[in-house]
Picture 1 (cartoon, rainbow, N blue to C red):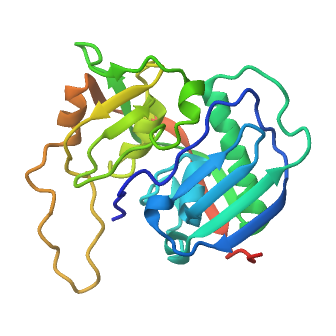
Picture 2 (picture 1 turned 180 degrees about the vertical axis):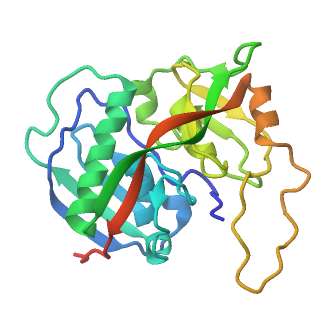
Length: 274
């Protein structure tokens, strides 16, 4: 199981334009040395340029297609080991006029960022992805009957964008506590989805940025032991469930069904470094 010592990715989310499906130019890719996970980050700058440090291909896929970094029924087949362990430093520039002036919602900005990263994966990692919609069991994150109990921040998305040390990221720990200075509900569902037994969707209708600080919780799924090895005792036994943790925040998970895109990686290759 992948355990985050801190959030591996953050974005400069608030820029005043949307990046269309533009090709990336002047792409530089080098092995990250040393590949310290604490230095991992992905930034998309206001002009659309992409800067990544000490990131794996699995991380790029996770952010480009909004799927958990851990195994997910929405991403198949199991990724090659090198996509998880090999880390890269990447600099890429977008083509001219890739970002026309516009006033955006956060969801549009996130979509623009994903398109930029998808372009990088196609151009330099040879990604061939097949996409089909499937009906599946999911969790809907909703507001509990007593209302939310979240500490909302007064700062705006634009103000948070340049606080790269704390915006849209979680500080990890034992049991994946929900510790973050400034996250929104999209960040929350993406993070907890790494350890739930079904995909998570945001149905809270809560906008803005929040500070959260909880104890750890028992993941809903653990990786299987190696062949021939007896299952070890669950190291998280004794921690509360995610349902309990979210309940203290005035949130809850409800089982439902939804039609979601499922991504099949038909080809992915190591890049030629330069």
